[in-house]
Amino acid sequence: MAHITSKYAIIVAGGKGLRMGADIPKQFLPVGGKPVLMHTISRFHAYDKDLKVILVLPKTQQAYWQELCEQYHFDEDYQLADGGASRFQSCKNGISIIPTDAVGLVAIHDGVRPFVSCDTISRCFDTAETAKAVIPVLPVTDTLRFVGDSHSGRNVLRSDYKAVQTPQVFDIQLIKKAYEQEESADFTDDASVVERLGQVVTMVEGNRENIKITTPFDLKVAEVLLEL
Image (cartoon, rainbow, N blue to C red; front, side, top):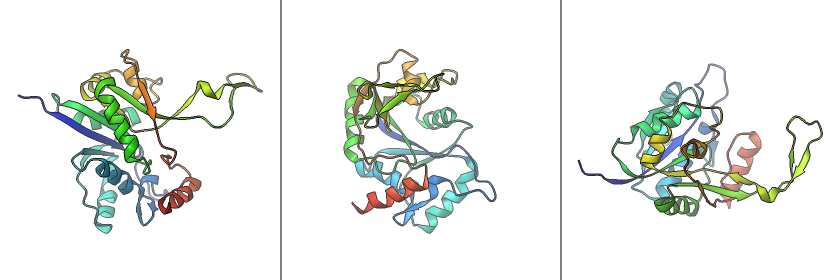
């Protein structure tokens, strides 16, 4: 069977199911008139309308998501994968949908980062064609203090650190092999999973608007960003 060069995006949204009386998960909250997650999916299709999108959602949220899609007439193309008990398991489930012999690149992105720019997505994919593992980063602007076991801690050079964003883009066969490893507490993102194989991770410039919506304040910032 001939190998096909492919480009995928796995959008990971939420690790917990809807519980009666619980707040609506952040990826479903409306921003600018439609749920956050719809903005996120649309960003990747704006970058490449033929990009194959895999949406990873907990089973308990999938019926609600389908209701939202009907309500907002959201008909963009994607495949659905079941979320796992952890982000690692969710990513593994998304990756497993990609054909075993696929050749190409896959982006893994947080569902609650709806403002990633097409330029950032493009930089990640373009660089990954040769680098195989790419992450978008930004300079740290706040003063940082290392605490450890100390009560007072100590200042550290912020120039020694970068703030990491998504999408993180990888060679498909590399990320498939990486996710065959046992899950570890050391795996804080997808890049750390491939680094365990000895793979060097290349950094490219992210975009400042590419915030992760996790608080009510972030939602207010998101509304402002949509107006820019």
